[in-house]
Length: 318
Image 1 (cartoon, rainbow, N blue to C red):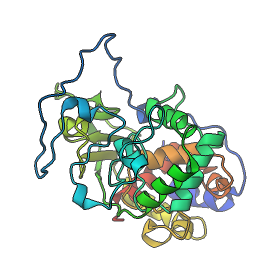
Image 2 (image 1 turned 90 degrees about the horizontal axis):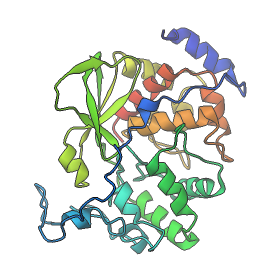
Image 3 (image 1 turned 30 degrees about the horizontal axis):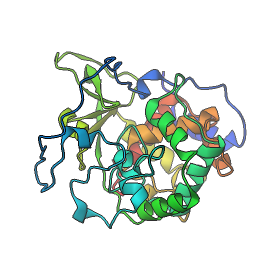
């Protein structure tokens, strides 16, 4: 049952540092790839793969190489630093492999484009110290790999990557759609994709972000590839939460949720990612020095309220 919106706003205003009972982290928020075969055949390293509207070409093996970020549109961004383009073998993967050369990210990781450089640096330092942890109950490989990677990341490489991503322009990759039912989904590349069965199921109180083109997702294409399905009315309810007097998101993240100073912009970013971060603050998985204000805000929020907030933020233009 949904918490009435008027009651939500009252609770927000009175929340302060009060602690609510621990919120369960839903497993549906972390789609996991099916187990890989024990001895997979080597990826092809001879046949070039092309994408529409790109002059680049990569082999299947190159698209799987974590030490080389596939860059389909190199003219769309400034030159990548070495750590973004190729990482530092053997332990530091190319930042642009997961977060994309333009920093737009994908639903399984963080969109970094346009975030303040010092904010990015602080989050990586929190991951390294343990002040920021993964929120998934049973772990989640994309997050686990990032936590492992940062232990070997130098301060110089972190500064170069943070300044590069901060200078890139965020463009939305996800369209937010309100619905009652969704197609049953498979998992491809750590995100949902429509099942070939064509069957549907109730969305209920979930936020499911899926790729519209599984093959393009697997080939690490850029551009708007994703849809986030949310319950009916989520965007309007999220807007009311965001503009609640004194406690709404805009009080810190600014009008249009476009960020203020070192407070990060939220507009147009992956609703899945935003929801995971709200749950991180709620559960204490995000407990860095700057987490206090957000912990106070989410203390009395239920999961459905967080879905509404994430849907609204994701629906905005950066």
